[in-house]
Length: 178
Image (cartoon, rainbow, N blue to C red):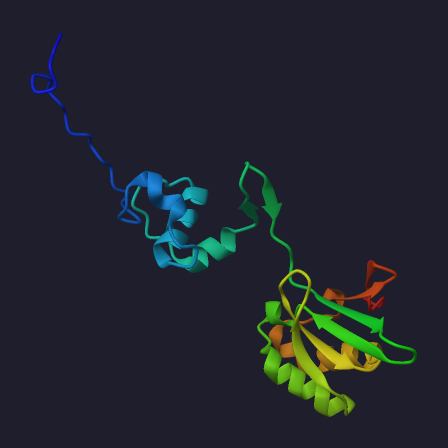
């Protein structure tokens, strides 16, 4: 029987990732918003996990069509869209909700101010149940809001086929002409 002093212990070799600079086992636990994590995810999706690749974030975003979730599930990347909804509050009061403007690069505070001035009503930014920011405008402005969005934000890439409205809890294209 050997005693602990007689046993020869060999040091364990730690392999550091060439992209992130941390041991490979720790890559998935990096903060999701740091540059190293984003580069590692891009390299992993491109199949370059062990290699030192100079991948930019633009390359990652261009190739990012799906997202891996825990458990191996794959979530398809959704196309940006704007969803309009009118909800009735009490009696004759209603609220128009505009969701998805930020996916086109529209600044919500500026858009909220624009809707408030154009419709002469209160407009504010609130959180949706899915934790996304949305604009709520007091009153039923479904038609006017859709037209204003297309006219004002055409330079941001907003086209008529990306605008939907909620009809009886069912998402429907707002404009039928395209």
